[in-house]
Length: 155
Image (cartoon, rainbow, N blue to C red; front, side, top):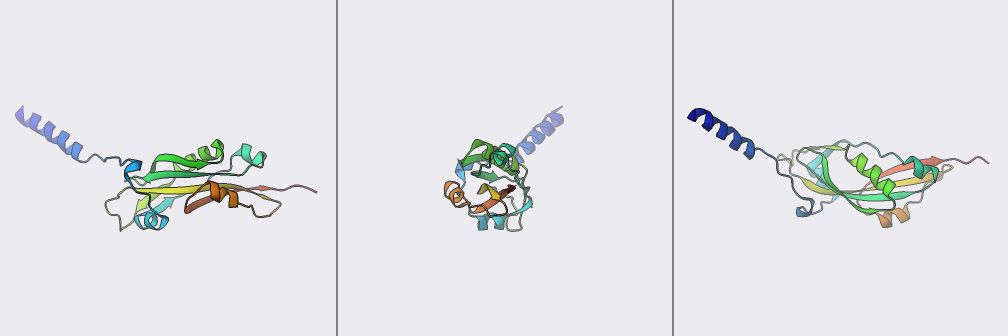
C-alpha cells in the first residue's frame, strides 16, 4: 500500500516537473527578424487569402500582429497592434495560427521568442503594381507578408 502511494506521489511530482510553462507576451522583449530567424526556422508559412468582400470593394489594408513563438513552434498570445480594417486582421490571425516553426541548433531548449509580422493586402489594377506606402506607415513590422488582389477592367 505504501509503495503504491509513493509510486503515485512520484508520478504526480514527475508530471509536474515536466509541464511547460507559458511565457506571457509582456514578459518577453520584442525580437528583430534576424534574432527570430536565428532561433526559429519557419516550417509552414501559408499565404494569407485576400478577403473576398475587400477585393470586390477594391479595398486595400494591413494588420500588424505581435505574438510569441512557443516551445512547440506555434504562434500564441496573438495581439493586434494596428489594423486598417477588422476583416484584414481576422484573415491575418487565421493565417498566423497555421504557421509552424522549428527550433534551430542555436535554440536547443526551444526558448519562446516574441515576434511581430505585418500583413499587407494590396490590389493591382490592370497589371500596375500596388502602392503600399500608406500601409507601411499605418502597420509596422520588419517581417512583411503581402497578399495581392488582381483587378482587370475591360475597356
